[in-house]
Image (cartoon, rainbow, N blue to C red; front, side, top):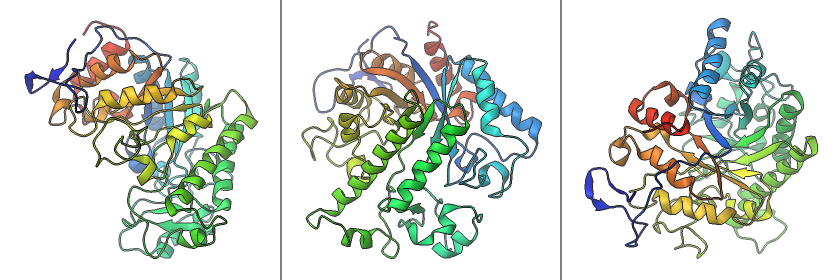
Length: 406
Protein backbone atom coordinates (compact mmCIF):
# COMPACT_ATOMS: atom_id res chain seq x y z
CA UNK A 1 0.00 0.00 0.00
CA UNK A 2 1.41 3.37 -1.04
CA UNK A 3 1.31 5.86 1.78
CA UNK A 4 -0.40 9.26 1.58
CA UNK A 5 -0.87 12.01 4.14
CA UNK A 6 -3.93 11.48 6.33
CA UNK A 7 -5.22 15.03 5.87
CA UNK A 8 -4.26 15.23 2.20
CA UNK A 9 -4.87 11.82 0.73
CA UNK A 10 -3.59 12.89 -2.67
CA UNK A 11 -0.17 13.94 -1.34
CA UNK A 12 2.30 11.02 -1.21
CA UNK A 13 4.51 10.43 1.81
CA UNK A 14 8.04 10.05 0.50
CA UNK A 15 11.31 9.15 2.14
CA UNK A 16 12.96 12.31 3.44
CA UNK A 17 14.05 14.68 0.66
CA UNK A 18 13.41 12.09 -2.06
CA UNK A 19 10.69 11.33 -4.60
CA UNK A 20 10.45 7.71 -3.45
CA UNK A 21 7.06 7.01 -1.92
CA UNK A 22 6.84 4.93 1.26
CA UNK A 23 5.09 1.61 0.73
CA UNK A 24 3.42 -0.28 3.59
CA UNK A 25 3.22 -4.10 3.34
CA UNK A 26 -0.31 -5.45 3.32
CA UNK A 27 0.55 -8.11 5.91
CA UNK A 28 1.81 -7.77 9.48
CA UNK A 29 4.81 -9.97 10.21
CA UNK A 30 4.86 -11.04 13.86
CA UNK A 31 8.19 -10.75 15.66
CA UNK A 32 9.50 -12.52 18.74
CA UNK A 33 9.18 -9.56 21.15
CA UNK A 34 5.94 -7.64 21.67
CA UNK A 35 6.23 -5.34 24.65
CA UNK A 36 5.12 -2.25 26.50
CA UNK A 37 6.71 -0.05 29.11
CA UNK A 38 5.07 0.36 32.52
CA UNK A 39 6.09 3.84 33.71
CA UNK A 40 6.17 4.42 37.45
CA UNK A 41 7.89 7.83 37.47
CA UNK A 42 5.39 10.56 38.40
CA UNK A 43 2.82 7.73 38.76
CA UNK A 44 2.23 7.74 35.02
CA UNK A 45 0.93 4.17 34.85
CA UNK A 46 0.43 3.22 38.49
CA UNK A 47 -0.82 5.27 41.47
CA UNK A 48 0.69 5.44 44.94
CA UNK A 49 -0.01 2.22 46.87
CA UNK A 50 -2.74 2.97 49.40
CA UNK A 51 -4.60 -0.32 49.49
CA UNK A 52 -2.80 -3.65 49.03
CA UNK A 53 -5.71 -5.48 47.39
CA UNK A 54 -6.46 -2.64 44.99
CA UNK A 55 -2.82 -2.36 43.98
CA UNK A 56 -2.57 -6.09 43.36
CA UNK A 57 -5.66 -5.80 41.15
CA UNK A 58 -3.85 -3.12 39.12
CA UNK A 59 -0.83 -5.38 38.71
CA UNK A 60 -3.10 -8.25 37.65
CA UNK A 61 -4.73 -5.87 35.19
CA UNK A 62 -1.34 -5.10 33.61
CA UNK A 63 -0.89 -8.79 32.89
CA UNK A 64 -4.47 -9.17 31.65
CA UNK A 65 -4.09 -6.27 29.24
CA UNK A 66 -0.80 -7.71 28.02
CA UNK A 67 -2.60 -10.95 27.19
CA UNK A 68 -5.38 -9.02 25.47
CA UNK A 69 -2.87 -7.31 23.18
CA UNK A 70 -0.69 -10.41 22.65
CA UNK A 71 2.15 -8.75 24.57
CA UNK A 72 4.83 -11.17 25.81
CA UNK A 73 7.33 -8.77 27.43
CA UNK A 74 6.93 -6.01 30.02
CA UNK A 75 9.56 -3.41 30.84
CA UNK A 76 8.64 -2.45 34.40
CA UNK A 77 10.21 0.74 35.74
CA UNK A 78 11.84 -0.32 38.99
CA UNK A 79 14.25 2.62 39.46
CA UNK A 80 12.59 5.89 38.40
CA UNK A 81 14.62 8.24 40.65
CA UNK A 82 17.63 6.47 42.15
CA UNK A 83 15.13 4.50 44.25
CA UNK A 84 13.37 1.14 44.15
CA UNK A 85 10.06 -0.56 43.34
CA UNK A 86 11.57 -3.70 44.89
CA UNK A 87 13.13 -4.75 48.19
CA UNK A 88 16.66 -3.39 48.20
CA UNK A 89 19.61 -3.06 50.57
CA UNK A 90 21.14 -0.39 48.34
CA UNK A 91 18.20 1.87 47.47
CA UNK A 92 15.16 3.26 49.30
CA UNK A 93 11.60 2.41 48.31
CA UNK A 94 10.32 4.94 45.77
CA UNK A 95 8.08 7.86 46.67
CA UNK A 96 6.03 6.86 43.62
CA UNK A 97 5.25 3.56 45.28
CA UNK A 98 4.52 4.58 48.87
CA UNK A 99 4.03 8.36 48.67
CA UNK A 100 7.13 8.95 50.73
CA UNK A 101 10.63 7.73 49.97
CA UNK A 102 11.89 4.91 52.17
CA UNK A 103 8.56 3.56 53.43
CA UNK A 104 8.33 -0.21 53.10
CA UNK A 105 5.34 -1.52 51.10
CA UNK A 106 2.99 -4.17 52.51
CA UNK A 107 4.13 -6.65 49.85
CA UNK A 108 6.91 -7.11 47.30
CA UNK A 109 5.48 -5.41 44.21
CA UNK A 110 8.09 -6.62 41.74
CA UNK A 111 7.87 -10.24 42.87
CA UNK A 112 4.07 -10.14 42.68
CA UNK A 113 4.16 -8.86 39.09
CA UNK A 114 6.78 -11.41 38.07
CA UNK A 115 4.71 -14.26 39.52
CA UNK A 116 1.52 -13.02 37.87
CA UNK A 117 3.22 -12.58 34.50
CA UNK A 118 4.90 -15.96 34.66
CA UNK A 119 1.48 -17.65 34.67
CA UNK A 120 0.87 -16.14 31.22
CA UNK A 121 4.41 -16.78 29.92
CA UNK A 122 5.14 -13.05 29.95
CA UNK A 123 8.69 -11.90 30.66
CA UNK A 124 9.42 -9.08 33.09
CA UNK A 125 12.51 -6.93 32.54
CA UNK A 126 13.68 -4.46 35.19
CA UNK A 127 13.69 -0.97 33.69
CA UNK A 128 16.02 1.46 35.43
CA UNK A 129 17.12 5.05 34.99
CA UNK A 130 20.85 4.82 35.64
CA UNK A 131 21.61 8.44 36.61
CA UNK A 132 18.42 10.35 37.43
CA UNK A 133 18.15 11.49 41.07
CA UNK A 134 15.27 13.95 40.73
CA UNK A 135 12.92 15.69 38.42
CA UNK A 136 13.35 19.51 38.28
CA UNK A 137 13.55 20.72 41.90
CA UNK A 138 12.23 24.26 41.48
CA UNK A 139 13.54 26.85 43.91
CA UNK A 140 15.33 24.32 46.12
CA UNK A 141 19.10 24.18 46.13
CA UNK A 142 20.80 20.87 45.48
CA UNK A 143 21.60 20.43 49.17
CA UNK A 144 18.06 21.33 50.21
CA UNK A 145 16.61 18.71 47.89
CA UNK A 146 19.10 16.03 48.90
CA UNK A 147 18.13 16.63 52.53
CA UNK A 148 14.57 15.52 51.67
CA UNK A 149 15.75 12.08 50.54
CA UNK A 150 15.78 8.94 52.63
CA UNK A 151 19.05 8.28 54.44
CA UNK A 152 19.59 5.13 52.34
CA UNK A 153 19.61 7.14 49.10
CA UNK A 154 23.06 7.06 47.46
CA UNK A 155 22.65 10.68 46.36
CA UNK A 156 22.05 11.90 49.90
CA UNK A 157 25.03 9.95 51.16
CA UNK A 158 27.26 11.28 48.36
CA UNK A 159 26.33 14.90 47.56
CA UNK A 160 29.76 15.41 45.95
CA UNK A 161 28.76 12.91 43.26
CA UNK A 162 25.61 14.78 42.22
CA UNK A 163 25.39 17.31 39.38
CA UNK A 164 22.50 19.37 38.02
CA UNK A 165 21.16 20.52 34.68
CA UNK A 166 19.75 23.92 33.75
CA UNK A 167 16.18 22.83 34.51
CA UNK A 168 17.12 21.91 38.08
CA UNK A 169 17.15 18.15 37.55
CA UNK A 170 19.76 16.27 39.59
CA UNK A 171 21.71 13.32 38.24
CA UNK A 172 24.56 11.12 39.37
CA UNK A 173 27.84 12.32 37.85
CA UNK A 174 28.48 9.92 34.95
CA UNK A 175 32.25 10.50 35.03
CA UNK A 176 32.79 9.23 38.58
CA UNK A 177 33.90 5.64 39.12
CA UNK A 178 31.93 5.43 42.39
CA UNK A 179 28.78 6.24 40.45
CA UNK A 180 29.44 3.62 37.80
CA UNK A 181 30.04 0.94 40.39
CA UNK A 182 26.91 1.87 42.32
CA UNK A 183 24.83 1.64 39.15
CA UNK A 184 26.28 -1.76 38.34
CA UNK A 185 25.81 -3.00 41.90
CA UNK A 186 22.16 -1.91 41.82
CA UNK A 187 21.56 -3.87 38.61
CA UNK A 188 23.27 -6.97 40.00
CA UNK A 189 21.22 -6.80 43.19
CA UNK A 190 18.01 -6.95 41.15
CA UNK A 191 19.24 -9.84 39.00
CA UNK A 192 20.40 -11.86 41.99
CA UNK A 193 17.13 -11.47 43.90
CA UNK A 194 14.39 -11.45 41.27
CA UNK A 195 13.44 -13.71 38.38
CA UNK A 196 13.56 -10.96 35.80
CA UNK A 197 14.90 -11.71 32.33
CA UNK A 198 17.27 -8.77 32.31
CA UNK A 199 17.73 -5.07 32.92
CA UNK A 200 16.68 -2.26 30.64
CA UNK A 201 17.71 1.41 30.47
CA UNK A 202 15.93 4.23 28.67
CA UNK A 203 17.19 7.47 27.10
CA UNK A 204 18.19 9.40 30.22
CA UNK A 205 21.98 9.43 30.14
CA UNK A 206 23.29 12.97 30.27
CA UNK A 207 20.16 15.12 30.50
CA UNK A 208 18.51 16.70 27.45
CA UNK A 209 19.17 20.12 28.97
CA UNK A 210 22.71 21.45 29.44
CA UNK A 211 24.46 21.02 32.76
CA UNK A 212 24.32 23.97 35.15
CA UNK A 213 27.27 26.29 35.62
CA UNK A 214 27.61 25.55 39.34
CA UNK A 215 27.08 21.75 39.48
CA UNK A 216 28.68 19.93 36.58
CA UNK A 217 31.45 17.55 35.51
CA UNK A 218 34.03 20.14 34.42
CA UNK A 219 36.33 19.44 37.36
CA UNK A 220 36.56 15.81 36.31
CA UNK A 221 37.13 16.90 32.73
CA UNK A 222 39.98 19.19 33.77
CA UNK A 223 41.59 16.26 35.61
CA UNK A 224 41.24 13.82 32.70
CA UNK A 225 44.24 11.66 31.83
CA UNK A 226 44.13 12.40 28.11
CA UNK A 227 44.45 16.18 27.83
CA UNK A 228 43.83 16.00 24.08
CA UNK A 229 40.34 14.60 24.65
CA UNK A 230 37.46 16.99 23.90
CA UNK A 231 34.66 17.43 26.46
CA UNK A 232 32.04 15.68 24.29
CA UNK A 233 34.31 12.67 23.76
CA UNK A 234 35.18 12.60 27.46
CA UNK A 235 31.50 12.38 28.37
CA UNK A 236 30.75 9.76 25.71
CA UNK A 237 33.68 7.67 26.93
CA UNK A 238 32.28 7.52 30.46
CA UNK A 239 28.74 6.72 29.33
CA UNK A 240 30.04 3.92 27.13
CA UNK A 241 32.15 2.67 30.02
CA UNK A 242 29.16 2.15 32.31
CA UNK A 243 27.31 0.42 29.46
CA UNK A 244 30.21 -2.01 29.05
CA UNK A 245 30.56 -2.54 32.81
CA UNK A 246 26.85 -3.28 33.14
CA UNK A 247 26.81 -5.67 30.19
CA UNK A 248 29.72 -7.62 31.65
CA UNK A 249 28.15 -7.66 35.13
CA UNK A 250 24.82 -8.93 33.75
CA UNK A 251 26.55 -11.75 31.89
CA UNK A 252 28.58 -12.61 34.99
CA UNK A 253 25.33 -13.25 36.86
CA UNK A 254 23.88 -15.35 34.03
CA UNK A 255 24.91 -15.30 30.38
CA UNK A 256 21.27 -15.74 29.34
CA UNK A 257 20.13 -12.54 31.05
CA UNK A 258 19.57 -9.58 28.75
CA UNK A 259 20.83 -6.00 28.90
CA UNK A 260 19.23 -3.52 26.56
CA UNK A 261 18.84 0.21 26.06
CA UNK A 262 16.07 2.39 24.66
CA UNK A 263 17.75 5.57 23.41
CA UNK A 264 16.43 8.68 21.76
CA UNK A 265 15.59 7.56 18.24
CA UNK A 266 18.27 9.49 16.34
CA UNK A 267 21.95 8.63 16.73
CA UNK A 268 23.10 11.36 14.34
CA UNK A 269 21.91 13.03 11.17
CA UNK A 270 23.75 12.39 7.93
CA UNK A 271 24.50 16.12 7.98
CA UNK A 272 26.74 15.76 11.05
CA UNK A 273 28.11 12.30 10.20
CA UNK A 274 27.89 10.49 6.83
CA UNK A 275 26.92 7.34 8.73
CA UNK A 276 23.89 9.13 10.19
CA UNK A 277 20.22 8.87 9.32
CA UNK A 278 18.43 10.50 6.41
CA UNK A 279 16.84 13.22 8.55
CA UNK A 280 17.11 16.99 8.81
CA UNK A 281 20.32 18.70 9.89
CA UNK A 282 18.84 20.47 12.91
CA UNK A 283 17.36 17.43 14.68
CA UNK A 284 18.35 16.42 18.19
CA UNK A 285 20.72 13.44 18.39
CA UNK A 286 21.69 11.13 21.25
CA UNK A 287 25.36 11.25 20.24
CA UNK A 288 25.42 15.02 20.74
CA UNK A 289 22.75 15.74 23.38
CA UNK A 290 22.96 12.76 25.75
CA UNK A 291 26.54 11.74 24.86
CA UNK A 292 25.17 8.28 24.12
CA UNK A 293 27.07 6.70 21.23
CA UNK A 294 24.49 4.03 20.53
CA UNK A 295 25.99 3.03 17.19
CA UNK A 296 29.27 2.31 18.96
CA UNK A 297 27.48 0.10 21.49
CA UNK A 298 25.93 -1.88 18.65
CA UNK A 299 29.23 -2.30 16.83
CA UNK A 300 31.03 -3.34 20.04
CA UNK A 301 28.11 -5.63 20.95
CA UNK A 302 28.06 -4.42 24.55
CA UNK A 303 24.26 -4.54 24.62
CA UNK A 304 21.97 -7.45 23.78
CA UNK A 305 19.25 -5.34 22.17
CA UNK A 306 18.37 -1.75 21.38
CA UNK A 307 14.94 -0.08 21.32
CA UNK A 308 15.23 3.29 19.56
CA UNK A 309 12.31 5.53 20.45
CA UNK A 310 10.91 6.27 16.99
CA UNK A 311 8.14 8.53 18.21
CA UNK A 312 7.63 10.39 14.93
CA UNK A 313 5.04 9.84 12.24
CA UNK A 314 5.63 8.76 8.65
CA UNK A 315 4.89 12.27 7.47
CA UNK A 316 7.13 14.13 9.92
CA UNK A 317 8.91 17.04 8.24
CA UNK A 318 12.28 16.54 9.98
CA UNK A 319 12.58 12.95 11.19
CA UNK A 320 10.19 10.61 9.36
CA UNK A 321 9.51 7.20 10.83
CA UNK A 322 10.33 5.21 7.68
CA UNK A 323 13.80 6.72 7.22
CA UNK A 324 14.71 6.07 10.85
CA UNK A 325 13.39 2.49 10.94
CA UNK A 326 15.40 1.76 7.80
CA UNK A 327 18.55 3.34 9.32
CA UNK A 328 18.32 1.29 12.53
CA UNK A 329 17.77 -1.92 10.58
CA UNK A 330 21.00 -1.22 8.72
CA UNK A 331 22.77 -0.29 11.97
CA UNK A 332 22.26 -3.73 13.54
CA UNK A 333 22.83 -5.71 10.34
CA UNK A 334 25.66 -8.20 10.73
CA UNK A 335 25.75 -7.87 14.54
CA UNK A 336 24.34 -9.95 17.38
CA UNK A 337 22.40 -6.98 18.72
CA UNK A 338 18.62 -7.37 18.43
CA UNK A 339 16.54 -4.42 17.22
CA UNK A 340 13.13 -3.67 18.69
CA UNK A 341 11.28 -0.57 17.48
CA UNK A 342 9.86 1.82 20.07
CA UNK A 343 6.40 3.10 19.04
CA UNK A 344 4.53 6.18 20.30
CA UNK A 345 1.18 4.65 21.15
CA UNK A 346 0.66 7.63 23.47
CA UNK A 347 0.54 10.01 20.51
CA UNK A 348 -2.46 8.36 18.86
CA UNK A 349 -5.19 10.97 18.54
CA UNK A 350 -2.77 13.91 18.58
CA UNK A 351 -3.31 16.57 15.95
CA UNK A 352 -1.77 15.69 12.59
CA UNK A 353 -0.82 12.29 11.22
CA UNK A 354 -1.47 10.59 14.57
CA UNK A 355 -5.15 11.43 14.09
CA UNK A 356 -5.02 8.52 11.68
CA UNK A 357 -6.09 5.51 13.75
CA UNK A 358 -3.85 3.35 11.54
CA UNK A 359 -0.63 5.36 12.04
CA UNK A 360 0.97 3.00 14.55
CA UNK A 361 -0.56 -0.11 12.97
CA UNK A 362 1.03 0.99 9.69
CA UNK A 363 4.33 1.49 11.50
CA UNK A 364 4.14 -2.08 12.77
CA UNK A 365 3.65 -3.50 9.30
CA UNK A 366 6.41 -1.33 7.85
CA UNK A 367 9.02 -1.89 10.58
CA UNK A 368 8.44 -5.61 10.77
CA UNK A 369 9.06 -6.03 7.06
CA UNK A 370 12.78 -5.71 7.89
CA UNK A 371 14.45 -8.99 8.80
CA UNK A 372 16.68 -7.10 11.24
CA UNK A 373 13.69 -5.98 13.34
CA UNK A 374 13.03 -8.48 16.11
CA UNK A 375 10.24 -6.79 18.03
CA UNK A 376 8.07 -3.83 18.92
CA UNK A 377 7.72 -1.89 22.16
CA UNK A 378 4.98 0.62 23.02
CA UNK A 379 5.00 3.68 25.27
CA UNK A 380 3.21 3.64 27.63
CA UNK A 381 1.07 1.07 29.42
CA UNK A 382 -1.85 3.32 30.42
CA UNK A 383 -2.72 3.72 26.74
CA UNK A 384 -3.52 0.01 26.66
CA UNK A 385 -6.29 0.89 29.10
CA UNK A 386 -7.54 3.58 26.72
CA UNK A 387 -6.40 6.48 28.91
CA UNK A 388 -5.55 9.80 27.19
CA UNK A 389 -5.29 8.18 23.78
CA UNK A 390 -7.31 7.29 20.71
CA UNK A 391 -9.21 4.15 21.67
CA UNK A 392 -9.81 3.41 17.99
CA UNK A 393 -6.09 3.67 17.32
CA UNK A 394 -5.31 1.28 20.18
CA UNK A 395 -7.92 -1.12 18.84
CA UNK A 396 -6.05 -1.15 15.51
CA UNK A 397 -2.87 -2.03 17.40
CA UNK A 398 -4.69 -4.81 19.26
CA UNK A 399 -6.07 -6.24 16.05
CA UNK A 400 -2.68 -6.05 14.36
CA UNK A 401 -0.82 -7.75 17.21
CA UNK A 402 -3.46 -10.48 17.27
CA UNK A 403 -3.33 -10.79 13.49
CA UNK A 404 -7.00 -9.90 13.11
CA UNK A 405 -8.35 -8.12 10.07
CA UNK A 406 -8.33 -4.31 10.37
